Amino acid sequence: MELIESQQAGVTIVEPQGRIDTIGAKPFGDRTVALINAGTHHLLIDLRQISYISSAGFRALLIAAKMMDRANGKLVLCGMSPEIKRLFEIGAFTNLFTICGTRDEGITKAT
Image (cartoon, rainbow, N blue to C red; front, side):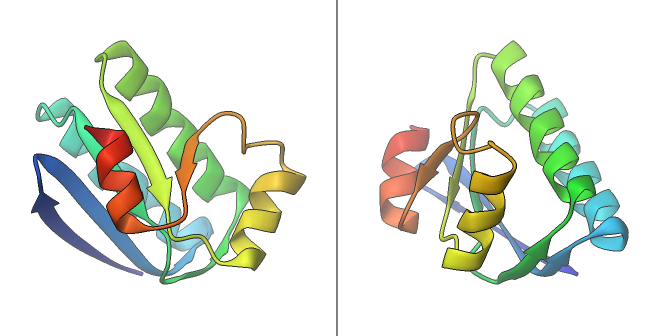
């Protein structure tokens, strides 16, 4: 899995590519934790290039969300394919995250 990072309007954007599965969840989770520990308070995770997310990936997202709550920051997810959104719905994660359709909408919600 590859991670692309950028900044826009004061928001750190992380765009993972591939699968956030047992193998990909560790580098993904480690990087998001490192960003939050480094002082990131506005984080957008763009999932448009994700083909699959496992329970390990959900765990990484939940850890990041909990850390961001403690830091009084905002974590927003965007760009989910219908398949990924379905996994969030099955796992009852849709109420735990701010989820937006587009990156622009996500940036607005993250600020």
